[in-house]
Length: 489
Image 1 (cartoon, rainbow, N blue to C red):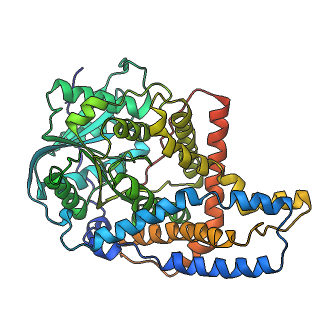
Image 2: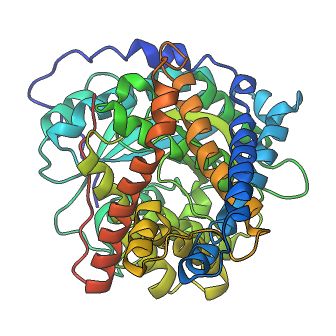
Image 3: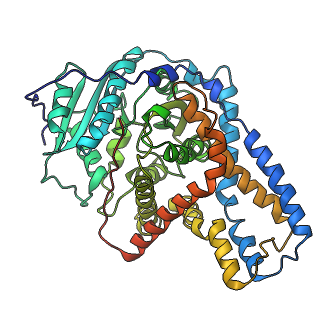
Protein backbone atom coordinates (compact mmCIF):
# COMPACT_ATOMS: atom_id res chain seq x y z
CA UNK A 1 0.00 0.00 0.00
CA UNK A 2 1.49 3.35 -1.05
CA UNK A 3 0.52 6.97 -0.99
CA UNK A 4 0.95 8.66 -4.34
CA UNK A 5 2.54 12.13 -4.45
CA UNK A 6 3.20 12.43 -8.18
CA UNK A 7 3.14 16.10 -9.27
CA UNK A 8 0.91 16.91 -12.20
CA UNK A 9 2.45 17.78 -15.52
CA UNK A 10 0.50 21.01 -15.72
CA UNK A 11 -0.77 23.40 -13.11
CA UNK A 12 -3.13 26.35 -12.96
CA UNK A 13 -4.13 28.82 -10.23
CA UNK A 14 -6.88 27.82 -7.86
CA UNK A 15 -10.30 29.24 -8.59
CA UNK A 16 -11.26 31.79 -5.90
CA UNK A 17 -13.60 30.52 -3.22
CA UNK A 18 -17.20 31.53 -3.75
CA UNK A 19 -17.61 34.83 -1.82
CA UNK A 20 -21.04 33.98 -0.46
CA UNK A 21 -19.82 30.97 1.49
CA UNK A 22 -17.29 32.91 3.56
CA UNK A 23 -19.77 35.73 4.15
CA UNK A 24 -22.56 33.44 5.30
CA UNK A 25 -20.43 31.49 7.74
CA UNK A 26 -20.13 34.53 9.99
CA UNK A 27 -23.79 34.10 11.01
CA UNK A 28 -23.81 33.21 14.72
CA UNK A 29 -25.36 29.97 15.92
CA UNK A 30 -27.93 31.92 17.94
CA UNK A 31 -29.48 33.35 14.76
CA UNK A 32 -30.31 29.91 13.38
CA UNK A 33 -31.60 28.42 16.60
CA UNK A 34 -34.71 26.39 15.64
CA UNK A 35 -37.98 28.29 15.64
CA UNK A 36 -41.37 26.59 15.84
CA UNK A 37 -43.84 29.08 14.40
CA UNK A 38 -44.28 27.01 11.23
CA UNK A 39 -45.11 23.93 13.31
CA UNK A 40 -47.60 25.75 15.56
CA UNK A 41 -49.43 27.45 12.66
CA UNK A 42 -49.65 24.25 10.62
CA UNK A 43 -50.83 22.26 13.63
CA UNK A 44 -53.56 24.79 14.40
CA UNK A 45 -54.78 25.05 10.79
CA UNK A 46 -54.84 21.29 10.17
CA UNK A 47 -56.54 20.63 13.50
CA UNK A 48 -59.27 23.17 12.72
CA UNK A 49 -59.84 21.90 9.18
CA UNK A 50 -59.70 18.28 10.29
CA UNK A 51 -62.20 18.86 13.07
CA UNK A 52 -64.60 20.58 10.65
CA UNK A 53 -64.24 17.69 8.15
CA UNK A 54 -64.86 15.08 10.83
CA UNK A 55 -68.04 16.83 11.91
CA UNK A 56 -69.41 16.37 8.39
CA UNK A 57 -68.29 12.79 7.86
CA UNK A 58 -68.94 9.38 9.37
CA UNK A 59 -65.36 8.14 8.99
CA UNK A 60 -66.25 4.45 8.92
CA UNK A 61 -65.40 3.30 5.39
CA UNK A 62 -62.42 1.35 4.11
CA UNK A 63 -60.57 4.53 3.08
CA UNK A 64 -61.09 6.01 6.54
CA UNK A 65 -59.47 2.96 8.13
CA UNK A 66 -56.65 3.16 5.58
CA UNK A 67 -55.88 6.81 6.33
CA UNK A 68 -56.32 6.28 10.07
CA UNK A 69 -53.41 3.86 10.02
CA UNK A 70 -51.13 5.27 7.31
CA UNK A 71 -51.45 8.97 8.16
CA UNK A 72 -50.83 8.24 11.84
CA UNK A 73 -47.70 6.18 11.23
CA UNK A 74 -45.23 9.11 10.76
CA UNK A 75 -45.55 10.00 14.45
CA UNK A 76 -42.97 7.25 15.06
CA UNK A 77 -40.29 9.56 13.61
CA UNK A 78 -42.03 12.94 13.95
CA UNK A 79 -42.17 12.87 17.75
CA UNK A 80 -38.47 12.02 18.30
CA UNK A 81 -37.64 14.62 15.67
CA UNK A 82 -39.54 17.37 17.46
CA UNK A 83 -37.97 16.38 20.78
CA UNK A 84 -34.54 16.58 19.12
CA UNK A 85 -35.35 20.02 17.70
CA UNK A 86 -36.41 21.30 21.13
CA UNK A 87 -33.18 19.93 22.55
CA UNK A 88 -31.19 21.68 19.82
CA UNK A 89 -32.96 24.98 20.55
CA UNK A 90 -32.19 24.65 24.25
CA UNK A 91 -28.54 23.85 23.64
CA UNK A 92 -28.07 26.82 21.31
CA UNK A 93 -29.63 29.09 23.92
CA UNK A 94 -27.01 28.25 26.56
CA UNK A 95 -24.51 31.13 26.91
CA UNK A 96 -21.77 28.87 28.25
CA UNK A 97 -22.04 26.18 25.54
CA UNK A 98 -18.75 24.31 25.26
CA UNK A 99 -18.51 24.66 21.49
CA UNK A 100 -18.29 28.46 21.89
CA UNK A 101 -15.17 28.07 24.07
CA UNK A 102 -12.56 26.55 21.77
CA UNK A 103 -8.82 26.43 22.35
CA UNK A 104 -6.19 26.04 19.69
CA UNK A 105 -6.07 22.31 19.03
CA UNK A 106 -2.73 20.51 19.10
CA UNK A 107 -4.15 17.15 18.00
CA UNK A 108 -3.67 16.21 14.36
CA UNK A 109 -6.78 16.61 12.20
CA UNK A 110 -6.91 14.54 9.01
CA UNK A 111 -9.64 15.62 6.58
CA UNK A 112 -10.54 12.61 4.43
CA UNK A 113 -12.30 13.35 1.15
CA UNK A 114 -13.10 10.33 -1.05
CA UNK A 115 -13.88 11.43 -4.60
CA UNK A 116 -14.74 9.63 -7.78
CA UNK A 117 -12.52 12.16 -9.52
CA UNK A 118 -14.75 12.93 -12.48
CA UNK A 119 -14.62 16.16 -14.42
CA UNK A 120 -18.18 17.04 -13.33
CA UNK A 121 -17.18 16.83 -9.64
CA UNK A 122 -13.80 18.55 -9.88
CA UNK A 123 -14.82 22.21 -9.44
CA UNK A 124 -16.85 21.42 -6.32
CA UNK A 125 -13.90 19.44 -4.93
CA UNK A 126 -11.55 22.35 -5.55
CA UNK A 127 -13.93 24.74 -3.78
CA UNK A 128 -14.20 22.41 -0.78
CA UNK A 129 -10.45 21.86 -0.44
CA UNK A 130 -9.80 25.58 -0.63
CA UNK A 131 -12.24 26.16 2.25
CA UNK A 132 -10.42 23.56 4.41
CA UNK A 133 -7.06 25.19 3.85
CA UNK A 134 -8.44 28.69 4.40
CA UNK A 135 -10.34 28.15 7.67
CA UNK A 136 -8.73 25.26 9.57
CA UNK A 137 -5.47 27.10 10.45
CA UNK A 138 -7.47 29.42 12.72
CA UNK A 139 -7.79 26.64 15.33
CA UNK A 140 -5.76 23.64 14.17
CA UNK A 141 -1.98 23.70 14.43
CA UNK A 142 -1.63 20.37 12.64
CA UNK A 143 -3.96 19.29 9.87
CA UNK A 144 -3.81 17.58 6.49
CA UNK A 145 -6.28 16.99 3.68
CA UNK A 146 -6.25 13.48 2.16
CA UNK A 147 -7.95 13.26 -1.24
CA UNK A 148 -8.77 9.58 -1.76
CA UNK A 149 -9.09 8.74 -5.45
CA UNK A 150 -9.28 5.65 -7.62
CA UNK A 151 -6.30 4.81 -9.77
CA UNK A 152 -6.77 6.28 -13.24
CA UNK A 153 -9.69 8.60 -12.38
CA UNK A 154 -10.76 11.20 -14.99
CA UNK A 155 -9.63 14.34 -13.15
CA UNK A 156 -6.33 12.88 -11.87
CA UNK A 157 -4.23 15.62 -13.49
CA UNK A 158 -6.24 18.43 -11.90
CA UNK A 159 -6.31 16.70 -8.50
CA UNK A 160 -2.55 16.16 -8.46
CA UNK A 161 -2.02 19.76 -9.54
CA UNK A 162 -4.06 20.87 -6.54
CA UNK A 163 -1.90 18.76 -4.21
CA UNK A 164 1.27 20.18 -5.77
CA UNK A 165 0.19 23.81 -5.34
CA UNK A 166 1.67 24.22 -1.85
CA UNK A 167 -1.46 23.43 0.15
CA UNK A 168 -1.38 20.81 2.96
CA UNK A 169 -3.00 18.30 0.63
CA UNK A 170 -1.94 14.83 -0.44
CA UNK A 171 -3.47 12.41 -2.90
CA UNK A 172 -4.10 8.88 -1.70
CA UNK A 173 -4.61 6.62 -4.70
CA UNK A 174 -6.53 3.39 -4.24
CA UNK A 175 -5.01 0.75 -6.56
CA UNK A 176 -7.39 -0.98 -8.96
CA UNK A 177 -6.47 -4.35 -7.51
CA UNK A 178 -7.07 -3.40 -3.88
CA UNK A 179 -9.64 -5.57 -2.10
CA UNK A 180 -10.78 -5.59 1.51
CA UNK A 181 -11.10 -8.79 3.53
CA UNK A 182 -14.91 -8.78 3.19
CA UNK A 183 -15.06 -7.55 -0.39
CA UNK A 184 -16.38 -4.07 0.38
CA UNK A 185 -16.89 -1.83 -2.65
CA UNK A 186 -17.57 1.76 -3.57
CA UNK A 187 -16.97 4.63 -1.13
CA UNK A 188 -16.58 2.32 1.88
CA UNK A 189 -13.69 0.60 0.08
CA UNK A 190 -11.92 3.95 -0.40
CA UNK A 191 -12.52 4.87 3.25
CA UNK A 192 -11.14 1.52 4.38
CA UNK A 193 -8.00 1.94 2.26
CA UNK A 194 -7.33 5.35 3.82
CA UNK A 195 -8.05 3.89 7.26
CA UNK A 196 -5.53 1.06 6.73
CA UNK A 197 -2.97 3.57 5.51
CA UNK A 198 -3.32 5.59 8.72
CA UNK A 199 -2.73 2.43 10.74
CA UNK A 200 0.47 1.73 8.81
CA UNK A 201 1.60 5.33 9.30
CA UNK A 202 0.86 5.05 13.06
CA UNK A 203 -1.80 7.73 12.99
CA UNK A 204 -4.51 5.56 14.56
CA UNK A 205 -4.00 7.26 17.94
CA UNK A 206 -6.20 9.02 20.47
CA UNK A 207 -4.62 12.38 19.60
CA UNK A 208 -5.52 12.08 15.90
CA UNK A 209 -8.97 13.01 14.62
CA UNK A 210 -10.47 12.13 11.25
CA UNK A 211 -12.96 14.51 9.64
CA UNK A 212 -14.90 12.83 6.83
CA UNK A 213 -16.14 15.21 4.14
CA UNK A 214 -17.81 14.81 0.75
CA UNK A 215 -16.12 16.20 -2.33
CA UNK A 216 -18.63 19.06 -2.67
CA UNK A 217 -18.80 20.12 0.98
CA UNK A 218 -16.70 22.93 2.43
CA UNK A 219 -16.14 24.47 5.84
CA UNK A 220 -16.51 27.94 7.33
CA UNK A 221 -15.33 29.75 10.48
CA UNK A 222 -18.30 28.47 12.49
CA UNK A 223 -17.50 24.89 11.48
CA UNK A 224 -13.91 25.19 12.66
CA UNK A 225 -14.90 26.78 15.99
CA UNK A 226 -17.38 23.97 16.65
CA UNK A 227 -14.90 21.26 15.68
CA UNK A 228 -12.24 22.73 17.94
CA UNK A 229 -14.75 23.20 20.77
CA UNK A 230 -15.83 19.59 20.59
CA UNK A 231 -12.26 18.25 20.56
CA UNK A 232 -11.27 20.59 23.40
CA UNK A 233 -14.10 19.30 25.59
CA UNK A 234 -14.33 15.71 24.30
CA UNK A 235 -12.78 14.39 27.51
CA UNK A 236 -14.69 16.63 29.92
CA UNK A 237 -17.50 15.40 32.14
CA UNK A 238 -18.11 11.84 33.19
CA UNK A 239 -17.82 10.27 29.74
CA UNK A 240 -15.48 10.60 26.78
CA UNK A 241 -16.89 11.49 23.38
CA UNK A 242 -15.29 9.82 20.41
CA UNK A 243 -17.56 10.89 17.53
CA UNK A 244 -19.51 13.99 16.57
CA UNK A 245 -21.68 15.20 13.71
CA UNK A 246 -22.69 18.68 12.62
CA UNK A 247 -25.27 20.20 10.26
CA UNK A 248 -25.40 19.95 6.47
CA UNK A 249 -26.49 23.13 4.69
CA UNK A 250 -26.77 24.06 1.04
CA UNK A 251 -26.02 27.68 0.08
CA UNK A 252 -28.18 29.05 -2.71
CA UNK A 253 -25.16 29.99 -4.81
CA UNK A 254 -24.04 26.35 -5.03
CA UNK A 255 -27.41 25.20 -6.39
CA UNK A 256 -27.64 24.03 -9.98
CA UNK A 257 -31.45 23.92 -9.84
CA UNK A 258 -33.48 26.18 -7.54
CA UNK A 259 -36.49 23.85 -7.28
CA UNK A 260 -34.29 20.91 -6.33
CA UNK A 261 -32.54 23.20 -3.85
CA UNK A 262 -35.91 23.94 -2.25
CA UNK A 263 -36.75 20.22 -2.17
CA UNK A 264 -33.45 19.48 -0.40
CA UNK A 265 -34.37 21.88 2.42
CA UNK A 266 -35.68 18.86 4.30
CA UNK A 267 -32.13 17.64 4.98
CA UNK A 268 -30.90 20.46 7.27
CA UNK A 269 -34.27 20.22 9.03
CA UNK A 270 -33.59 16.56 9.79
CA UNK A 271 -30.08 17.39 11.02
CA UNK A 272 -31.28 19.76 13.74
CA UNK A 273 -34.09 17.43 14.82
CA UNK A 274 -33.95 13.67 14.31
CA UNK A 275 -30.17 13.37 13.89
CA UNK A 276 -29.40 15.90 16.60
CA UNK A 277 -31.71 14.07 18.97
CA UNK A 278 -30.07 10.66 18.50
CA UNK A 279 -26.39 11.48 17.95
CA UNK A 280 -26.51 14.28 20.51
CA UNK A 281 -27.79 11.91 23.17
CA UNK A 282 -24.76 9.66 22.78
CA UNK A 283 -25.70 7.02 20.21
CA UNK A 284 -26.34 7.72 16.50
CA UNK A 285 -29.24 5.28 16.23
CA UNK A 286 -30.81 7.26 13.39
CA UNK A 287 -27.61 6.98 11.36
CA UNK A 288 -24.90 9.42 10.32
CA UNK A 289 -23.94 11.48 7.31
CA UNK A 290 -20.75 10.79 5.41
CA UNK A 291 -19.75 14.45 5.66
CA UNK A 292 -18.95 16.63 8.65
CA UNK A 293 -18.40 13.38 10.54
CA UNK A 294 -15.63 13.70 13.12
CA UNK A 295 -14.27 10.55 14.73
CA UNK A 296 -11.21 9.74 16.81
CA UNK A 297 -8.68 7.84 14.69
CA UNK A 298 -8.16 5.16 17.35
CA UNK A 299 -11.91 4.43 17.34
CA UNK A 300 -12.11 4.29 13.56
CA UNK A 301 -9.17 1.89 13.62
CA UNK A 302 -11.28 -0.52 15.67
CA UNK A 303 -14.43 -0.25 13.54
CA UNK A 304 -13.02 0.27 10.05
CA UNK A 305 -15.15 0.49 6.92
CA UNK A 306 -15.12 -3.10 5.71
CA UNK A 307 -18.86 -3.79 5.80
CA UNK A 308 -19.18 -6.18 2.86
CA UNK A 309 -20.07 -5.95 -0.85
CA UNK A 310 -23.72 -4.96 -0.31
CA UNK A 311 -22.85 -1.76 1.59
CA UNK A 312 -24.31 1.30 -0.18
CA UNK A 313 -24.73 3.51 2.90
CA UNK A 314 -21.39 3.17 4.65
CA UNK A 315 -22.15 6.04 7.04
CA UNK A 316 -25.21 4.23 8.43
CA UNK A 317 -23.23 0.98 8.80
CA UNK A 318 -20.55 2.87 10.69
CA UNK A 319 -23.22 4.42 12.93
CA UNK A 320 -24.64 1.01 13.85
CA UNK A 321 -21.19 -0.41 14.56
CA UNK A 322 -20.35 2.61 16.73
CA UNK A 323 -23.60 2.25 18.69
CA UNK A 324 -22.71 -1.37 19.37
CA UNK A 325 -19.09 -0.78 20.40
CA UNK A 326 -19.25 2.67 22.05
CA UNK A 327 -22.79 3.37 23.30
CA UNK A 328 -23.36 6.81 24.74
CA UNK A 329 -20.10 8.28 23.40
CA UNK A 330 -21.22 10.41 20.44
CA UNK A 331 -22.15 14.09 20.34
CA UNK A 332 -23.73 16.73 18.12
CA UNK A 333 -22.27 20.18 17.47
CA UNK A 334 -23.84 23.24 15.78
CA UNK A 335 -21.15 23.82 13.17
CA UNK A 336 -22.41 23.83 9.60
CA UNK A 337 -20.80 22.52 6.44
CA UNK A 338 -21.60 24.02 3.07
CA UNK A 339 -22.46 21.68 0.20
CA UNK A 340 -24.46 21.50 -3.00
CA UNK A 341 -27.88 19.98 -3.62
CA UNK A 342 -28.38 17.73 -6.70
CA UNK A 343 -28.28 19.51 -10.04
CA UNK A 344 -31.45 17.89 -11.42
CA UNK A 345 -34.63 16.09 -10.40
CA UNK A 346 -33.16 12.92 -11.91
CA UNK A 347 -30.11 13.14 -9.64
CA UNK A 348 -32.35 13.93 -6.67
CA UNK A 349 -34.37 10.76 -7.31
CA UNK A 350 -31.28 8.62 -7.91
CA UNK A 351 -29.77 9.84 -4.64
CA UNK A 352 -32.88 8.84 -2.67
CA UNK A 353 -33.04 5.54 -4.51
CA UNK A 354 -29.55 4.62 -3.33
CA UNK A 355 -30.31 5.63 0.25
CA UNK A 356 -33.48 3.51 0.40
CA UNK A 357 -31.82 0.52 -1.25
CA UNK A 358 -28.82 0.70 1.05
CA UNK A 359 -30.84 1.23 4.24
CA UNK A 360 -33.08 -1.72 3.43
CA UNK A 361 -29.99 -3.88 2.99
CA UNK A 362 -28.61 -2.66 6.31
CA UNK A 363 -31.87 -3.00 8.23
CA UNK A 364 -32.70 -6.51 7.01
CA UNK A 365 -29.48 -8.29 6.05
CA UNK A 366 -26.70 -6.66 8.05
CA UNK A 367 -24.62 -8.63 10.59
CA UNK A 368 -25.09 -5.70 13.00
CA UNK A 369 -26.93 -6.97 16.13
CA UNK A 370 -30.72 -6.69 15.89
CA UNK A 371 -31.02 -4.53 19.00
CA UNK A 372 -28.87 -1.88 17.30
CA UNK A 373 -30.69 -2.07 13.98
CA UNK A 374 -34.21 -1.91 15.42
CA UNK A 375 -34.43 1.92 15.81
CA UNK A 376 -33.09 2.43 12.29
CA UNK A 377 -35.45 -0.22 10.90
CA UNK A 378 -38.38 1.67 12.42
CA UNK A 379 -37.32 4.86 10.61
CA UNK A 380 -36.73 2.99 7.34
CA UNK A 381 -40.16 1.36 7.46
CA UNK A 382 -41.86 4.73 7.98
CA UNK A 383 -39.89 6.16 5.07
CA UNK A 384 -40.66 3.19 2.81
CA UNK A 385 -44.38 3.60 3.57
CA UNK A 386 -44.16 7.17 2.22
CA UNK A 387 -45.67 6.26 -1.18
CA UNK A 388 -48.72 4.74 0.52
CA UNK A 389 -49.25 7.93 2.55
CA UNK A 390 -48.99 10.42 -0.31
CA UNK A 391 -52.29 12.27 -0.90
CA UNK A 392 -52.16 11.42 -4.63
CA UNK A 393 -52.05 7.70 -3.87
CA UNK A 394 -54.78 7.99 -1.22
CA UNK A 395 -56.98 9.82 -3.74
CA UNK A 396 -56.37 7.06 -6.29
CA UNK A 397 -57.37 4.42 -3.74
CA UNK A 398 -60.49 6.41 -2.83
CA UNK A 399 -61.55 6.72 -6.49
CA UNK A 400 -60.95 3.03 -7.17
CA UNK A 401 -63.02 2.05 -4.11
CA UNK A 402 -65.69 4.64 -4.80
CA UNK A 403 -65.29 6.01 -1.28
CA UNK A 404 -64.00 9.59 -0.98
CA UNK A 405 -64.36 9.76 2.80
CA UNK A 406 -60.81 10.11 4.17
CA UNK A 407 -61.82 11.26 7.66
CA UNK A 408 -60.33 9.24 10.54
CA UNK A 409 -62.39 6.55 12.23
CA UNK A 410 -61.70 8.30 15.53
CA UNK A 411 -61.83 12.09 15.90
CA UNK A 412 -58.93 12.02 18.36
CA UNK A 413 -56.64 11.12 15.46
CA UNK A 414 -57.05 14.60 13.96
CA UNK A 415 -54.54 16.24 16.36
CA UNK A 416 -52.13 13.38 15.61
CA UNK A 417 -52.43 14.01 11.89
CA UNK A 418 -51.97 17.71 12.51
CA UNK A 419 -48.86 16.96 14.56
CA UNK A 420 -47.37 14.89 11.74
CA UNK A 421 -48.21 17.52 9.13
CA UNK A 422 -46.80 20.26 11.34
CA UNK A 423 -43.51 18.39 11.69
CA UNK A 424 -43.33 17.82 7.92
CA UNK A 425 -43.88 21.51 7.08
CA UNK A 426 -41.47 22.52 9.85
CA UNK A 427 -38.67 20.33 8.43
CA UNK A 428 -38.86 22.10 5.07
CA UNK A 429 -39.43 25.57 6.54
CA UNK A 430 -36.53 25.40 9.03
CA UNK A 431 -34.30 23.68 6.49
CA UNK A 432 -34.92 26.52 4.05
CA UNK A 433 -34.10 29.05 6.78
CA UNK A 434 -30.80 27.29 7.48
CA UNK A 435 -29.94 27.15 3.79
CA UNK A 436 -30.73 30.83 3.25
CA UNK A 437 -28.68 31.82 6.34
CA UNK A 438 -25.79 29.91 4.76
CA UNK A 439 -26.21 31.78 1.48
CA UNK A 440 -25.28 35.22 0.24
CA UNK A 441 -27.25 37.30 0.96
CA UNK A 442 -28.27 35.35 4.11
CA UNK A 443 -32.02 35.85 3.75
CA UNK A 444 -34.83 34.26 1.79
CA UNK A 445 -35.92 35.74 -1.51
CA UNK A 446 -39.57 36.75 -1.70
CA UNK A 447 -40.69 33.85 -3.86
CA UNK A 448 -38.88 31.06 -1.99
CA UNK A 449 -41.11 30.52 1.06
CA UNK A 450 -44.48 30.64 -0.76
CA UNK A 451 -43.05 28.39 -3.45
CA UNK A 452 -41.77 25.95 -0.84
CA UNK A 453 -45.15 25.67 0.88
CA UNK A 454 -47.04 25.22 -2.39
CA UNK A 455 -44.64 22.61 -3.75
CA UNK A 456 -44.17 20.38 -0.69
CA UNK A 457 -46.59 17.83 -2.26
CA UNK A 458 -44.45 17.84 -5.43
CA UNK A 459 -41.21 17.50 -3.47
CA UNK A 460 -42.65 14.62 -1.48
CA UNK A 461 -43.70 13.02 -4.77
CA UNK A 462 -40.08 13.16 -5.95
CA UNK A 463 -39.12 11.46 -2.70
CA UNK A 464 -41.79 8.83 -3.37
CA UNK A 465 -40.34 8.04 -6.79
CA UNK A 466 -36.90 7.55 -5.27
CA UNK A 467 -38.35 5.33 -2.54
CA UNK A 468 -40.23 3.17 -5.04
CA UNK A 469 -37.16 2.73 -7.22
CA UNK A 470 -35.04 1.85 -4.19
CA UNK A 471 -37.56 -0.71 -2.93
CA UNK A 472 -37.82 -2.23 -6.41
CA UNK A 473 -34.06 -2.61 -6.72
CA UNK A 474 -33.84 -4.10 -3.24
CA UNK A 475 -36.62 -6.57 -4.01
CA UNK A 476 -35.07 -7.56 -7.35
CA UNK A 477 -31.70 -8.19 -5.66
CA UNK A 478 -29.76 -6.79 -8.56
CA UNK A 479 -26.06 -6.10 -8.27
CA UNK A 480 -25.60 -2.89 -6.29
CA UNK A 481 -24.54 0.28 -8.05
CA UNK A 482 -23.19 3.29 -6.11
CA UNK A 483 -24.61 6.39 -7.76
CA UNK A 484 -22.35 9.46 -7.65
CA UNK A 485 -24.25 12.50 -8.84
CA UNK A 486 -22.72 15.52 -10.55
CA UNK A 487 -21.58 18.35 -8.24
CA UNK A 488 -22.19 21.96 -9.31
CA UNK A 489 -19.40 24.49 -8.92
